[in-house]
Image 1: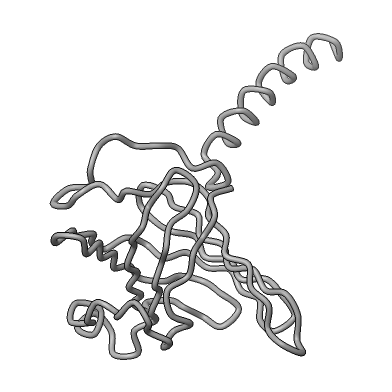
Image 2: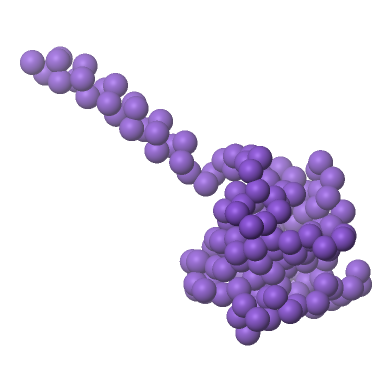
Length: 163
């Protein structure tokens, strides 16, 4: 009887395990369908920007792009966090590529916080990104001006390498 139960339970556990592991946000899957009412975001997968803070050490900023969200992870001795930003909109106007999303989670809660990111110089292996946390909500995200090439606010434009 025990052998029969093991024979029946083992395949079931294998099926459940494979079904749940395919739903994790660890492995972004490309999606060729643009979101309703928007243009398909030109990025997918995992990007990292590594930088040094004098007298503190090395920091890493990770952005993982999914079809409905972007995961943000910062690691290093100065600051570490991990949160999701759910896509609210994405628009392209000429060369301007503007993404707006709302946060959830984080060591300092980002629940309901609006973020805006701009993308430029997209290649197969890199992208230049400007990321801004909006203190005044959605209105600020929608009206935030495209940053100058030499902008220094919000750490300026940064080149992220695709992993």
